[in-house]
Amino acid sequence: MLSMITTKLYEKAPIALIAPCFMAVFGYFLMKKLVWDLVDEVYDCGDYLLIKNGEDDIQVPLSEIINVSASVLVNPPRVTLRLAKPGKLGDEISFSPIKRFTLNPFARNEIVDNLIVRVDQARYRRNAL
Image (tube, helix red, strand yellow):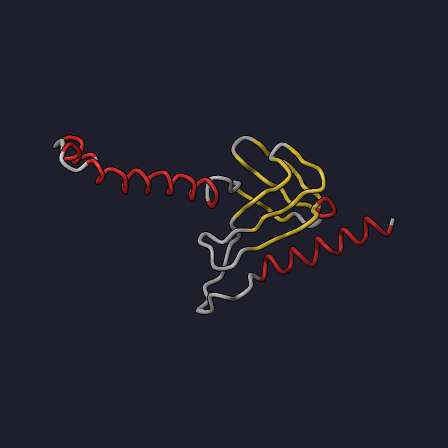
Protein backbone atom coordinates (compact mmCIF):
# COMPACT_ATOMS: atom_id res chain seq x y z
CA MET A 1 0.00 0.00 0.00
CA LEU A 2 2.85 2.35 0.87
CA SER A 3 4.57 1.60 -2.43
CA MET A 4 1.33 2.36 -4.28
CA ILE A 5 1.22 5.78 -2.66
CA THR A 6 4.90 6.61 -3.21
CA THR A 7 4.83 5.53 -6.87
CA LYS A 8 1.42 7.19 -7.39
CA LEU A 9 0.04 3.94 -8.79
CA TYR A 10 -3.27 4.75 -7.13
CA GLU A 11 -3.82 7.49 -9.71
CA LYS A 12 -4.02 4.84 -12.46
CA ALA A 13 -6.08 2.33 -10.44
CA PRO A 14 -7.74 3.97 -7.42
CA ILE A 15 -9.78 0.85 -6.79
CA ALA A 16 -6.55 -0.95 -5.83
CA LEU A 17 -6.55 1.02 -2.54
CA ILE A 18 -9.95 -0.30 -1.48
CA ALA A 19 -8.83 -3.87 -0.66
CA PRO A 20 -5.87 -2.86 1.57
CA CYS A 21 -8.00 -0.27 3.36
CA PHE A 22 -10.79 -2.80 3.89
CA MET A 23 -8.30 -5.37 5.25
CA ALA A 24 -6.81 -2.79 7.63
CA VAL A 25 -10.24 -1.89 9.03
CA PHE A 26 -11.22 -5.57 9.27
CA GLY A 27 -7.94 -6.40 11.04
CA TYR A 28 -8.43 -3.56 13.51
CA PHE A 29 -11.91 -4.73 14.55
CA LEU A 30 -10.82 -8.38 14.66
CA MET A 31 -7.89 -7.57 16.97
CA LYS A 32 -10.11 -5.34 19.11
CA LYS A 33 -12.65 -8.14 19.55
CA LEU A 34 -10.28 -11.10 20.02
CA VAL A 35 -7.01 -9.86 21.51
CA TRP A 36 -6.92 -6.33 22.87
CA ASP A 37 -9.56 -6.96 25.55
CA LEU A 38 -7.56 -9.80 27.17
CA VAL A 39 -6.20 -9.05 30.65
CA ASP A 40 -2.48 -9.48 31.27
CA GLU A 41 -2.46 -12.15 33.99
CA VAL A 42 -4.89 -14.27 36.00
CA TYR A 43 -3.78 -16.22 39.07
CA ASP A 44 -5.88 -18.87 40.79
CA CYS A 45 -5.64 -18.23 44.53
CA GLY A 46 -8.08 -20.87 45.75
CA ASP A 47 -11.35 -19.13 46.57
CA TYR A 48 -10.62 -16.04 44.44
CA LEU A 49 -8.83 -15.06 41.23
CA LEU A 50 -6.15 -12.38 41.23
CA ILE A 51 -6.41 -10.46 37.98
CA LYS A 52 -3.67 -8.11 36.77
CA ASN A 53 -4.14 -5.74 33.89
CA GLY A 54 -1.55 -3.01 33.56
CA GLU A 55 -1.35 -1.27 36.93
CA ASP A 56 -4.71 -2.67 38.12
CA ASP A 57 -4.76 -5.66 40.48
CA ILE A 58 -8.18 -6.91 41.50
CA GLN A 59 -9.40 -9.89 43.46
CA VAL A 60 -12.52 -11.61 42.20
CA PRO A 61 -14.11 -14.11 44.61
CA LEU A 62 -15.31 -17.22 42.81
CA SER A 63 -18.76 -16.68 44.35
CA GLU A 64 -19.03 -13.34 42.47
CA ILE A 65 -18.64 -14.99 39.06
CA ILE A 66 -21.95 -15.59 37.30
CA ASN A 67 -20.68 -17.47 34.27
CA VAL A 68 -17.47 -18.93 32.85
CA SER A 69 -17.45 -19.36 29.10
CA ALA A 70 -14.60 -20.89 27.16
CA SER A 71 -14.31 -20.60 23.41
CA VAL A 72 -13.22 -23.52 21.27
CA LEU A 73 -11.29 -23.21 18.02
CA VAL A 74 -10.19 -19.63 18.66
CA ASN A 75 -6.56 -18.65 18.72
CA PRO A 76 -5.57 -17.49 21.27
CA PRO A 77 -7.96 -19.56 23.40
CA ARG A 78 -10.26 -17.35 25.48
CA VAL A 79 -12.10 -17.62 28.73
CA THR A 80 -14.64 -14.96 29.64
CA LEU A 81 -15.80 -14.43 33.20
CA ARG A 82 -19.11 -12.65 33.71
CA LEU A 83 -19.19 -10.93 37.08
CA ALA A 84 -22.17 -10.29 39.36
CA LYS A 85 -20.88 -6.80 40.19
CA PRO A 86 -18.90 -4.75 37.69
CA GLY A 87 -15.46 -3.72 38.92
CA LYS A 88 -12.55 -1.67 37.56
CA LEU A 89 -12.38 -3.91 34.50
CA GLY A 90 -16.12 -4.01 33.82
CA ASP A 91 -18.61 -6.84 34.13
CA GLU A 92 -16.75 -9.21 31.79
CA ILE A 93 -13.11 -10.22 32.05
CA SER A 94 -11.45 -12.21 29.28
CA PHE A 95 -8.12 -13.98 29.41
CA SER A 96 -6.17 -16.63 27.57
CA PRO A 97 -5.55 -19.72 29.71
CA ILE A 98 -2.57 -22.02 29.51
CA LYS A 99 -3.38 -24.90 27.21
CA ARG A 100 -1.56 -28.19 26.97
CA PHE A 101 -0.57 -29.45 23.55
CA THR A 102 -3.07 -31.84 22.04
CA LEU A 103 -3.79 -33.08 18.55
CA ASN A 104 -7.52 -32.87 19.24
CA PRO A 105 -8.72 -29.36 18.32
CA PHE A 106 -11.96 -29.98 20.24
CA ALA A 107 -10.25 -30.98 23.49
CA ARG A 108 -11.51 -29.22 26.59
CA ASN A 109 -9.13 -27.26 28.76
CA GLU A 110 -8.73 -28.95 32.17
CA ILE A 111 -7.99 -25.65 33.94
CA VAL A 112 -11.20 -24.10 32.63
CA ASP A 113 -13.29 -27.19 33.46
CA ASN A 114 -11.92 -27.14 37.01
CA LEU A 115 -12.68 -23.41 37.32
CA ILE A 116 -16.27 -23.92 36.12
CA VAL A 117 -16.87 -26.58 38.79
CA ARG A 118 -15.31 -24.46 41.55
CA VAL A 119 -17.30 -21.36 40.56
CA ASP A 120 -20.50 -23.40 40.65
CA GLN A 121 -19.62 -24.78 44.09
CA ALA A 122 -18.79 -21.30 45.44
CA ARG A 123 -22.04 -19.90 44.06
CA TYR A 124 -24.01 -22.78 45.63
CA ARG A 125 -22.36 -22.15 49.02
CA ARG A 126 -23.15 -18.41 48.76
CA ASN A 127 -26.80 -19.11 47.97
CA ALA A 128 -27.09 -21.72 50.74
CA LEU A 129 -26.19 -19.14 53.40
